[in-house]
Image 1 (tube, rainbow, N blue to C red):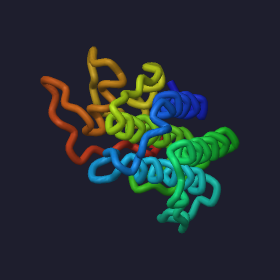
Image 2: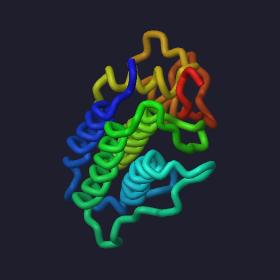
Image 3: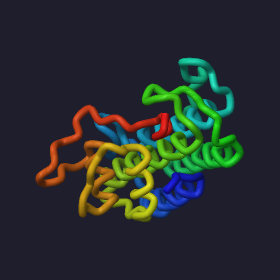
Length: 195
C-alpha cells in the first residue's frame, strides 16, 4: 500500500478540477488556511511542494534547502494553480527518479521518497480543501489515495468505518468526528514506517 508519485498526480488533478471552477474569483478576498487567504494558501502549497522536491535532490543535513518559492504579486488564480501544478510535477518527477533508499531531512522525521510523496498528497488535499471551502467548493479526492496516505503518514490513527477522506480531514484537524478526540497539534510521520 505504498504512496507513489501517481497518488500525488491524482491528488493534484483533483485539486485543479475543483479549484479551476473558481478561477475567475478573487482569491485574495476569501479564506484559505487559518488566517491566510486562498491566494496565500495556494502560494504556500506551491512552495511546500517545490521545497520537498529540493530536499530529495540536495539532501542537506538537518535543515531545509535555503530558498523560498513565491508567486508574482499580480498572479491570478489560474497562475496560482499553475504554480501548484509546477510544484507537484517537480515533486512527482523527483520521487519517480529517486532511489527508494534515498533519505532527506524533514522535521517530522528523515523521510524517504514515499514519505515526501505522502507529505505532498496531504498538502495538496488538505490545503486544497482549505481553499475550496473559502470558495464555497469541496474537494472529492480518490478514496484509495486517502487510504494510502492515512496508512503511511498517520499510522497510529485508527479510523474504523469512517470515510478515508473524512478521516484525513479529521487527522489534520480540519473537522471533528463524533466519538473521536480532536487532533490538535497533529503531526504526520515523515520517516519510513520501518525506521
